[in-house]
Length: 356
Image 1 (cartoon, rainbow, N blue to C red):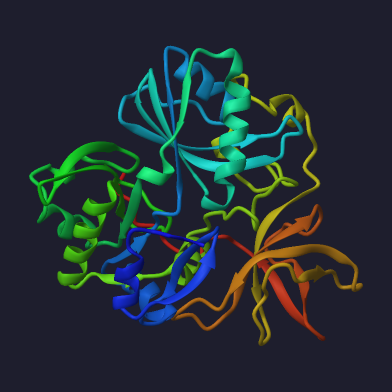
Image 2 (cartoon, rainbow, N blue to C red; image 1 turned 180 degrees about the horizontal axis):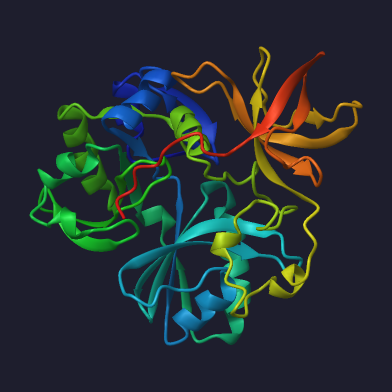
């Protein structure tokens, strides 16, 4: 099992460690609910060094990225974009963040569990393009500083004017006189920053943030936070059997350009999609519990579900067949031996506080 550069720091802080994507990772420190609410109310820091970083360079970098990814490369330098890589079938290889330095240099940040598969896919697709593909994952560590106080804490440690950065901007800067790549982004629904650097620099920054009172946060609340913000997770809302429209991620698909998998999506009739439900009775709907109609017939399955910290009603995201998408529709979740009544609702579990 691999360890991130912060492994010893997690142990010092009393983290509960688990295996995730081949890494020993902290699932929680002080408790999931406490960490979740710290990010919602103040600020928390996550070790996300397990994520994958793949660099595309060369004169065809922009053209290749536009062919590889569903969304278009930003025209502006030092801007990010969310997108997906698709198989020819139109289903999802992975979702990712694309960092556009300039037309000849683009960094892709991919899911840890998909890194090897993604790198192999990207290098295979790049063969007819004039590009160099480099896997930077082993030499790159990453922190996510998330919450409404993230900018204030970070600004104390850098001369860079963070107020200039809008959501999905990124730049290279010194923090604590050490070099980092910093983007205004995250996976929580809150304002925040994702910070990339060398291992020794990330250790110094993490120790400083903890000393300043920032709450260390584990993978447990990372999942509840992203779910509450209605952000997808590979293996749940998206996977190799799901297309972007079924996942309700059409906003990240530019059908005006050519990309791998586009032909499979053209004219495809939507027969199922991810919707939100709220349980009306006691229970928590978890992946992959079955969802039933009034007649007891299976109409879908739960992709993610929780009783969120500070809430009284359990909610979930579910992949449901056509005919059961309307808000107010009654459905049932099979939770072990019990059939629990639920209702389709809107996906707005959270009012997001991104900096526009």
